[in-house]
Each structure stands twice: as C-alpha cells, then as structure tokens.
Length: 284
Image (cartoon, rainbow, N blue to C red):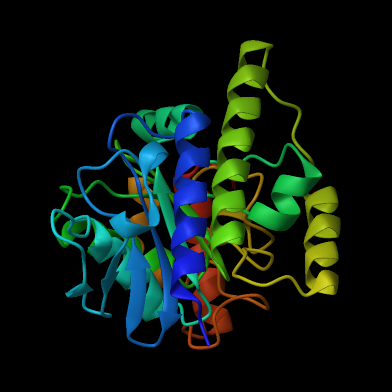
C-alpha cells in the first residue's frame, strides 16, 4: 500500500533540494510521482518549491485532472508534459522539471549535451537532446517532447529548462543533478580551450558496460544515423534542422537498448539515410 503522506514529504524534500541548489528561482519548476495507473501526486502552481509542506501537494489523474487538492492549491499547468512522459513511458515513476543554470544556458543557446567527456555521464545519462520550444501551459511542449521519450531519460527544453524522468523520485532528481553537473563541466572545459572527448572506441566500451549492468531506462547505447551507424556520442548533430528533414529521422537511435515498440529500420533504408546525413554534415 502506497503511503501517500510519505511520498508528499519526499516531494517537499526534493523541492527544497532543487531550490537550495539554485536549480529553480521563485516559483519555478515542478515535480510529480506516479502512485497508481491513474493517480499521480504533483507540486502546485504558484508556490516556491523550497518552502512546500505536504498539504501543498495535489493529486491528479492520468489526464491531469484534479482528484484532490487543498483549498488554495492547484496543479501546475505544466503537468501536461509530465503526463505525456507517463503515457509513453510505463517504466517511469517520477518526473522532475527545473531550470538549472548551466543546463538551461545550453538549452537557450541551442546546444544539446552530447559530447562524451566523462565515463559516468556516458554510461548513466547518455545524450541529452533539445526538445523544440513550446509555449508554457500548452500542448506544444508535450507534443514536441514526445518523439524523444522512447530513447532518452532527460531532455533540455529549448529556451526553457530541463526535464528528467526515472523509476522513482530520487532517481529522477539525481538525473537532474547529473544533467546540471555535466553541463557545468562542459561549459567550464570550453573556457579552458575545449573538452577532450572520448573517441568512438572508448564510447563503445562505455556503452558495453551499461548494457552489462542492465541499468533501467532508455539510452542511445546503440546506433545514431548521424555517426555512420556507430553511436550517438561524438556527434552533436542530433537536433540539427537539416537532419530532421530526412525521411528516416523517425528511425534515429534504434538499436539494442531502444524501446521495444520503436520502429525497426530496414538495413538498406538505414544505409541510404546514413549516406545522406553524412553528406549533409560534410562527413563523407
């Protein structure tokens, strides 16, 4: 039996963490936890995540409609993107949205976090693409987010912030910490002349370690059409507008670690699209 009060306290604790770590300002950010197939606890709108207590927390159904909320509290309008994650990823138990300084700076600059610079980031986090901009509180954000859900466990939201999800609340929060830490290291290494990236051989070794561990979640430890059918890292072109114009874009990141219901690309089609992408990127 789920102890809802204990989960509400955990949500408040994570809210304090993201606030104290400067991952949100004022009333920014939101957190949700799945407690059953049709019940979710979530943070309210218009409230600082650093000063919540359990009675602030709302309960909604899978459509984001209120099941229970104390007077003066209602769910964030951005619960829509949380619900889209739960809908498309039944393995997910919690979603965290924040505006961490470095990661959001990359989101504003339009730079995805795909450079392989640390073993831990490559193994546990994978690539972090940028979901195209959507107007807050509308269906634009979940609609733009959806195509990334089968292949990743974290995204940057263009000109907005970051979104992470995982099996439980603590894991989803830790993934947000990892995204911000990775972004800060990447930013600071660029100031020092640019990071030294792992080559493809070492990236493949790290992918193999992930597969051996059987870690939960999705991860591009498979193929990436941007990189001649080898891997996602060492790439940086995952979000290029030119790449998205190719007819095989929907087959990106399909491989051993991809979602079971992801489309299976025909070998000839993959080879053809790869050749086009490589030519477009000047990597013949």
